[in-house]
Length: 211
Image: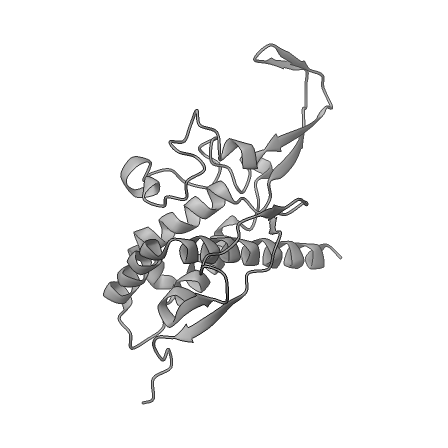
């Protein structure tokens, strides 16, 4: 069923994006603290963060953009050339299946300073107006044009709101090791983690205070 494919595809990629973002924040506690402070300043600790708050949380939005840049859950997209063309000296016949490597584009040093470094600040100070909706071809986690992901807006709402709540309501502790998270990737149609993210949520506020 088509609706089942859409549902499964949407939930899987959104969950993976949240997982990668949380892993990066655990490995960068100063970023986690900055995001938490932003949420506390805007929302406070008497209620849980809501979707309507996201527009007032620019650093949280930058974290999600940076996660989509360095960990695109759809690392490859497929297109078909409608007519014969030549691109940078390469002749591409009509009806050719083309694989666009989004993972590689997001890590290209020709477009990104220190591309392997997770740095949300780049989307505030350097390229703050850069969007993820396919208007800038060096950041296309949802594809671009008429074949772009139809669930982009929903995915951004789901990822940002849920990640914000997880940052606001919990401290995240990693069991064993040195307190850091392994960031090895697993090959596949979606960009999954090679090892599950195993950590312990420690409540920091009660999101449902008693009346």
